[in-house]
Image (cartoon, rainbow, N blue to C red):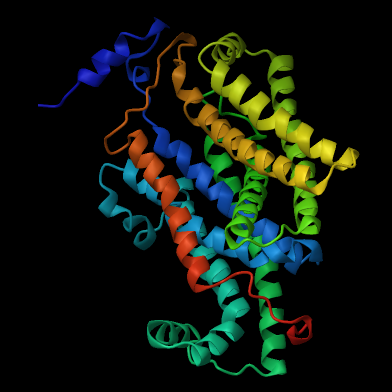
Amino acid sequence: MPDYSHLYEALKNVVGYIYPNDVEAHWSILIVLYPYLTGLVAGAFILASLERVFNVREVRPTYRLALLTALAFMLIAPLPLLSHLSKPWRFWEILVTPHLTSAMAMFGFVYMWYLMVVLLLEIWFDYRRDFVVWSQQSTGFKKFLYKTLTLGVTDISEKAIRFDEAAVKTITIIGIPSAFLLHGYVGFIFGSVKANPWWSSVLMPVIFLFSAIVSGIALVMLIYLLSNKIRRVGQNMECLDTLGRYLLYVFIIDFALEGLDVIQRTYTSEESFDILYALVHGHLFETHILFQLILGTLIPITMLGLIQLRNIEPQTRVWMYWLSSVLTLAGIFFMRWNVVIGGQLFSKSLRGFTTYKVGLVGWEGGLMALGQAILPVLILALLIKLLPPWQEHPQSDRAH
């Protein structure tokens, strides 16, 4: 017999008048994690494109790190969705029986395109010369691994390297709109739900996209700071200052877009305005006002702005970048939380609220979400161990 005890528990916290199917939040913390991970992927890749396509040389030390970060998080991005499904072993059916008008099925196509054609190809072309060199210098398993990764292409002449560089640049140019599509589609999914006034907004895909870029830059900055600390090498202030400057610019655009969305909702003041006002100032006050707006947005923007306006010592700037990146990542997570969970807390009757409580254990519990959030970090550590991203060739060896 089905266990409905959780529904009775949820009914105790219902406020006002709600429909029966609004008692329980159907999308859990795993669905919060899903757009968060895909956003990190898209943001990290777009950061990598700064060096390769837009020739921003200052961020070159983070180029390969950003690519590996995108790959590690990309591999795990579908896991929260699969864990949320009641029959996850049937996921492959959306790939072999494509439904071209299904927005959810589009994720499978975009994911496969982005992973197989963009990320893996770009990493292979960028590392191909190193694979050949490492296969000649290594022994045992690493020698076998690197030799396999060359795919039999061992030509490292100047002409071949020049071709690799051109291929990387071409793939990056193709990858930028792909990254936009990967995360813009997530915002599209929410923005298309017309029945939910919290989600239904034409700005939702754009807000998701810019918040993704913000989170990706913050993540790569944090990993770069941490990797330098672990390797006991000095921080590259030119690189960090450039990352901080781009993070500030994109963050301001993202903040302005969210502000524009709030202004538009306030100005139109549709029938749903009262329930959304109560939602933000009640059930979402801590996560929206305190965590997302103040801690996760205003404080990082203020610190990054001060760095641009004041002559601050390098050591102090480094600590400000540490704090800014951590707060930014937390703020974007709570933005995802407020969108996904917040949209399920009020009834479609617009006259009542339910609650959502994260369980510690279980298939969709907090430990499962924490494990899936840590997993890409472990994969990234393994990738960095096998494919050191900071092992650059001398400038004379580069084809460009």
